[in-house]
Image 1 (cartoon, rainbow, N blue to C red):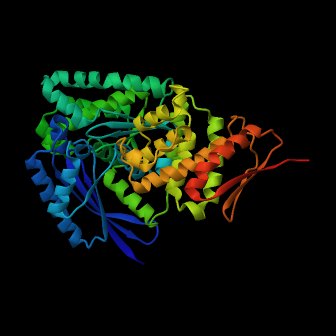
Image 2: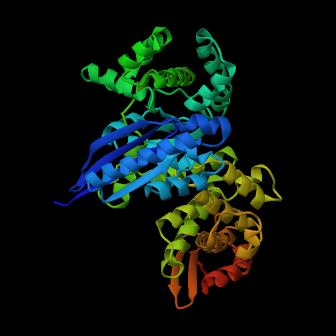
Image 3: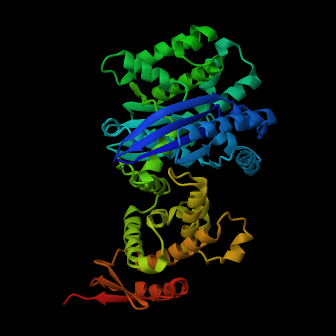
Length: 515
């Protein structure tokens, strides 16, 4: 039985964490070690936009020690990720280069949606317990240093997810400027949070009440886990029990609380801020129970590594959650579900039939499905500039599980479905972050979605029983319908030109009429 060791490193806003994992056999993942070092990078970033030289020295010294520990475990692979404290600096690339030159460790930067998706994976890795909870009306409250992410589930389906700039360190920085008395702190946190949470409730909750909240953070989660372990058979804490923690935090001294909660004294104020936020979220959602699985970003990093390396079996359909997120965005902007389903079906039929030609994989197929679902979101704002408004909506809206670069691919495919295609030289002058490979993905997916769009130009879903066969240099699309498709045929011919340019394949539309 082969064994593989892996290190996951989280360069967080308040502390650095490294976990060493062992993978043995099939579907067996075991944590061997966990090392944590307190370095408050976030306070510098949120206050000045840069990380001080002193903290950079501490960061690099700690990562060098992590490298030595990895060597002692004979680690075969590692992933190191930075989150908002590095992501929001003015000189992110310089910091990455300094770290790599001084420590040999390459720290990649996670977008907010990627970070939250990994947190989500770490929770989903709990398997049957997670699946059982999200069968009911459940929320995941992911509380970080820079922001919080609220995700709603019902019947094992992701309904919505939203990011709010209410992170613990960000709120602490604002409190430092206000310099309130101890008795005022809770009220001020509540007031700062209530404005954003009130808007969130109108947009996403409405009359929906949530039964359970799964908390993911580095502040109160350990307390919840220990509380559950103390009670035989306990899996969650009630709102009343959680209120007991708040009373403890309100009335206890810093040294006493640090000892009782098993945290550093510097962390006690952050635990209090997180607890006040969590209590406010529980009240907002009407939740009675708070769950915590004791996982963090490192668990999600390791889970994704093992998943990609086929070392463990996937416990949850994460792609379905990304699709559900896109469908929720489409609904928000009054997109046609029936039209989106038709376009998604047509695009995937064409994509799958062209595998030998386009050279794209499962991830690119996902981008195409997302583009089909979001193809008309811009109509909510303008019926004239649909391409540009759709692009702006998608780029301004996080899609959980997609990086910024991936979201730009989807947004451009939607844009060019409606607008004239920009070639690479012209696109570069517009300030795009697309590289050559991403640009080619956009071109190929645009050619496919344009062709599919022409096949439902009337929005009447006339094309039934579509079959696609690639033969020589032709893509033969056979449709079984008695409808008049004169309009679709005309647009199909026009949209075929770009398809031929991209793939050197001529699409042919054949109608099978029933006798």
